[in-house]
Amino acid sequence: KTIAGTFCHAPILGEIEILRDALVEIDGEGRIAKVVAAGSAAHAETRAAAEAAGTLVVAPPRSYILPGFVDLHIHAPQYPQLGKALDVPLEVWLQQHTFPLEARYANLAFAKRHYSALVDDLIANGTTTALYFATQHVEASKALVDICLEKGQRALVGKVAMDNPAECPDYYRDSSAEAGIAGTKALIDYVAAHPENHGLVHPVITPRFVPSCTDPMLEGLGELARECGCHVQTHCSESDWAHGYVLDRFGRTDAETLDRFGLMTRRTVLAHSNFLTDGDMDLIQACGAGVAHCPLSNAYFANSVFPLRAALAKGVRVGLGTDISGGPTASMIEAQRMAIAASRMLETGVDPALPQGARGRPGSRIDFDIAFHLATAGGGDALDLPVGQFAPGFHFDAILVDPDAPGGTMRIWDDIDSDEDALQKIVYTASKANLAAVWIGGRGVSGEAL
Ligand code: GUN
Ligand code: FE
Image (cartoon, rainbow, N blue to C red; front, side):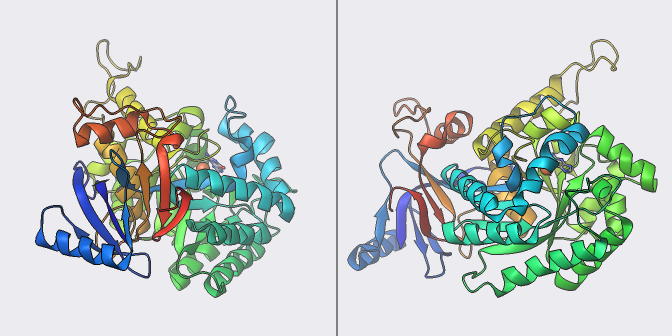
């Protein structure tokens, strides 16, 4: 089909491109075949051909089409506790709230019910690609794969590896490193052999974080990463407790430790990464790994703000994550807003440790253009997947934003707002109700049948 509308995207960090009244032609595989700007000869031709074939889809007036959001860090099983237990430290939250909840996914019916609700909610919020932590259980992780395939969400799913008896409770851990590695392989094989999977879902090697894994587990998963070339995800230097734990155990930072175990690859995504040293950033950049910046969760659990501008200046690939349920929202629009707010606080917040009159870290702030890039093209780039922008060969994963949708929270004034103003207002004021339709791989998965 061919979609006619006004497309906004941000393929290059710090730049917004708006294609007013353009056409995007989608091929049989759900990828973008061509993007045709208004006013060209090709535009009239393409439009006429699509009209004749009955494949032209025209977006409503005043609407905008954006790339779907890439949630680069989310714990699928934690959705039922969204908005709960945000007032305790990370290590207490894990032991008292999160591990008991995740353990319940041993029950497959429970897993299916909650995973279905989550995937529906994410799609309705415009998340077209999600990099998921599932739980330690192989069967429930397979169920999450099935649900993403059934609902048509692009997803990367990891069975969580966690075998360290010193940090994981008896009722919720891999019985041995071998068992955790075998379970990880089982999920990889399941995804590869799934008859309905035509590249929509990918498996991920997922050591929860260094503290929850023994050395043999980290070693085995590193070997597996080398053998299969799969994505890898983990938490990296999140809070001062988590960061200090790894320093105590290895005398090295998280990034250095992960690298020694072979877990820092071009397809690795490190969640949080708040306490990175300069050397860590160089290492991450050299390995081509990415960072999932989770600003809302960082406010509650990390005792820190991720130094985003410093990482970007080093050429580190960065995307945004909700970190459900460390972050209490399924909305990647809210994640963008929080990324902006956090950057402002890092820049101008008063740190009592600084000399009197000194404030924050100069040059830290970002605005909507950078946040929008991170939530779309930046996330796609960190995953090495062709998503997050409107260009030939990229998957047509997109959202239709209708400022006039009933129940929406944004206003656009034709006599005041430019297209760029409209995008700015989408980032700062749109809500789920404004997302009138969502496509993944060219398939309408939510909202109006378009
Ligand atoms: N570190 C280890 N596990 C977790 C988790 O589930 N959430 C967060 N935010 N940090 C973690
Ligand atoms: Fe997390």
